[in-house]
Image (spheres, rainbow, N blue to C red):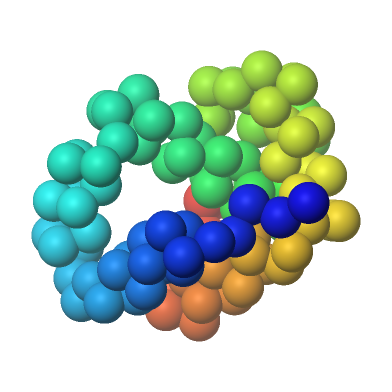
Length: 100
């Protein structure tokens, strides 16, 4: 069973049209709650830290997430659709993925 349909594909195209951080922020602020945006940001930070080989304790402390969230992100990072890896690769190539 897939979640993809005409409405989700329209959402993906809309996101792809955004040309700046400001445009993305404006769209996400209208589309999502602040908590949803913060949760997505924490998941991305978690994925970055996992890809750097950080341990769960360090990630939990830095990203402010539970070990259950870390485990969920780890599964997606290792067995998901490749989205985290794609984005992390693009961030690193722009010099932005490093959390040191």
